[in-house]
Length: 289
Image 1 (cartoon, rainbow, N blue to C red):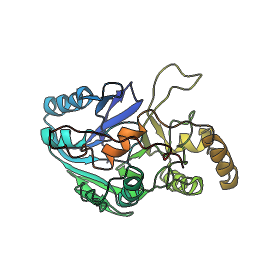
Image 2 (cartoon, helix red, strand yellow):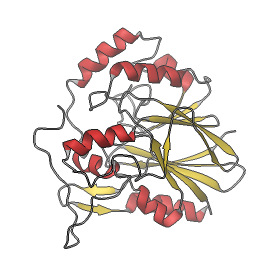
Image 3 (cartoon, rainbow, N blue to C red):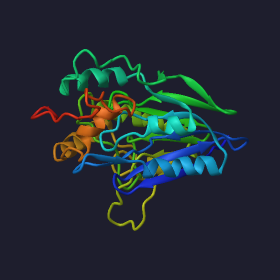
């Protein structure tokens, strides 16, 4: 079965969100939504999420899942806002508990912050399946970028998050806590073992030199042939050396501090204080260790 896929590109964070729907009905799922956030003012807005809501309502879709491929470090999730307006269960990989434990300490969240993934409706394990109407979704655990990264395979489509980018841009960084270039190599090999015609939908596009328009859909065959980091049968040793050398030159994502605090809570903000005000913390000299 081939799901119908509609992409929504967020220019501010270069993030691609998706609605995928059963071609034989109204059942659908949302993948990797965005809550707009202006860091300078601390203000959020829902323009990106509202586009998804509008599309859902105009097409009379029934949202069954709001899926996260991982805990994003470069944008905030709009999952709770979307759930309020269009329904659906919020799902993420069971590795979220590792992420929550790690960053609960980084942000000094204390014992009030639950580290059991209970903020989400569903924690997926490798090999799990789920339904979107008549379509079966299969889950494979693809760590390396983060411990909680998943790839969702629905029919002939695979939603890989940040694990792979378009072939001319390569693969995800692996230098966040819990990341591993060795694990990423193994995860990519699992994805590339899917049928060559499998459509791959990536989580970001950064418009590398030589291309004049953003793109987010490729195939397993194209990735195996042309991915600049791991195509043409790149060896594990060569990939790990390249990835670790490259990662050592990268700065932290602009929105990593707010993103992690919000996304490890399934898109919810930290609890308000007694005056109803919400605050995020800035750890000094702790990220990147």
